[in-house]
Image (cartoon, rainbow, N blue to C red; front, side, top):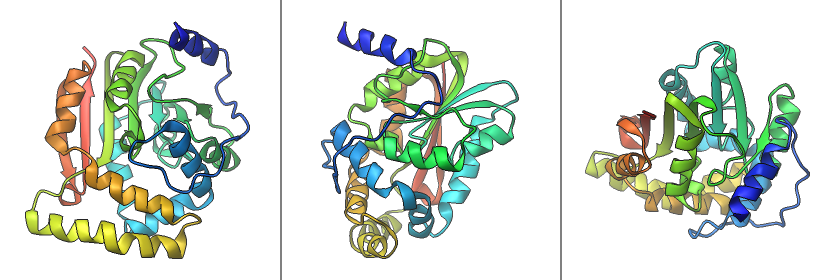
Amino acid sequence: MADAAARRKARLLPWGRVPACHNGPVTRASLEKQPHEVASMFDGVAERYDLTNDVLSLGQDRRWRREVARAVDARPAQKVLDLAAGTATSSLPFTRAGAYVVPCDFSIGMLQVGKRRHAWLPFTAGDATRLPFRDDTFDAVTISFGLRNVHDTDAALREMHRVTRPGGRVVICEFSHPTWAPFRTVYTEYLMRALPPVARAVSSNPDAYVYLAESIRSWPDQEALAARLSDAGWTKVAWRNLSGGIVALHRGFKA
């Protein structure tokens, strides 16, 4: 009953309204991924988040986002929900395709930075496990590098399914497990040893990127995530690897 009441209340907020940021300072969330900790951590890195990602990925994040845009295949007049949208860098390709895009995130700091840069977009504050949207609303729901940070992954996958219209699709871009064992070892070493020092040079909160490395290392592999999508009700679930499996792109459909 409480969840339903909260969802009804959230629907009363107009899309595009970004509330004030009241999260206290948390520099590094734990792997328990308590929502207030994760949100506060991202509040603290919002201003330089896009630049830091570009540096840490050696520019590969731009390629990954292009692949997401191709997989979503947004069309004019379609409604696309971009979850964990942050500053809405991931949302822009969908707007250029003519779709109506709702960037949604639970970090108010990220939304505030995004609103300054892209004031025309309907930024919406929302938790992926309790989305403030009606059933069967969107033609496509996508989340890039954000599902890993959600406290209850399965609840989020079910919520994405709920707000997608029948025949609609989900596209998830997330760090995964490199498929070649020797490369997987090198990649893990980079995450745990090289990534934090690089983050110290470019990020406003290097400790957040220690969490980033830990959360990537503990995330399920491609097959396990596909199984969770199926369990949440998605059909025709498939994935393909990018950059040797550093990132995986999963897609499913709502029957």
